[in-house]
Image (cartoon, rainbow, N blue to C red; front, side):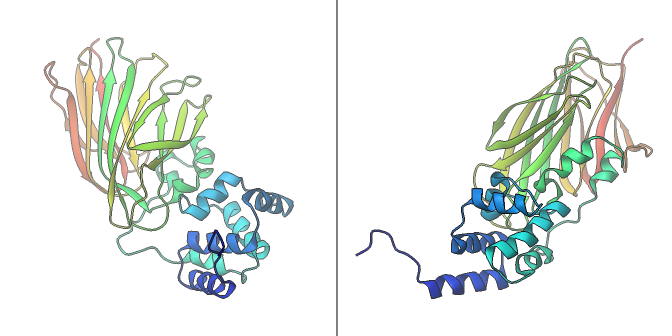
Length: 308
């Protein structure tokens, strides 16, 4: 009797044919790779030779459903994979083109939230998960701390996310510092882990790709907690978060070591647009300033001014 059970060739072929017809993409790709007998390193080399380079990490993410190919160069690599793996032309590509499950929210483009010429856009596009809509935030609680020197010191975030599509299980978070050259640092995570971090020192940005501690079925929720430390020590007068999807609740609380003169919450439809839903925020040494909102995509934040 064999030590390991080996699927019958006919059964393996039927499983692959069913996955290519019904999806999801990750299962079809994984079965096609298994049938080919090619390791991820050899697939990487074949793709590179065909002018469609993809890292072994990205291939692993695709086959396990952690991310999905979305960018044009990734989709071209899938076309090459179809040939390398010996599956019918467009079999994998068409699985990616199918509409999402009911309940997946529409997402606005990053360009609307950051501006068409912002230097963050190329970095965002390097993350396959940045354009996904499968893991969305339904509740976001942010705790921002501002030191006595008027500079931002740290940001703690607690998100409740829901899986609304298969198979992607990752989200990308972005934080901008106050001055170029000294971007914030991702210092801790809880109930999730950072699988990739990119720093843009000149622009003052840090990007992190977070994965929940367990895989989620469609409809399930998870908690993600993470903390950033600011490093620039430069006084600032505002903070905002940019939402690609609607969110059921967003609570921003700001702890001031020294109270500002005025403070208000606001919403923007785009970076250059006028402030909307402007709300005056009471200030007290006994409690943090806070603004609580819900609604569609856009930019939500708080702005303050200092005495004198």
